[in-house]
Amino acid sequence: MASANTVEITDENFEQEVLKSPVPVLVDFWAEWCMPCRMLAPTIDKIATGYTGKVKVGKLDTDSNRDASIKYGISAIPTVILFKDGQVVEKFVGLKSEADFRRSLDAVL
Image (cartoon, rainbow, N blue to C red; front, top):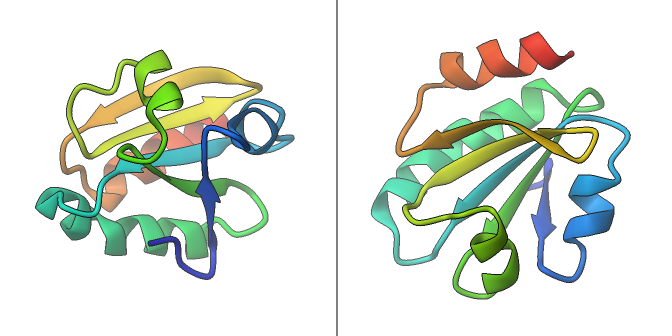
């Protein structure tokens, strides 16, 4: 469900795409069957477009990528985690507004 400006994150590429990224990374932990995840998707896509070149935005399917989901304690979806320099900066659980994400992204840039 990744769009043109979002990266598909998997257990296999998580370290390279997220932990070793030279720019902050916003990771949307989602699942196909999750209605709130689908409701959040346009906001995530808008953030990805608005922060192109400054922030990497990725989507991780929790059903297909259990290792990363377990490692980061994903117990409810949607959960969006902001990483910088391989570290968790902020964790958003549930539906959040574009403004919530922008505040946190602007603070790490």
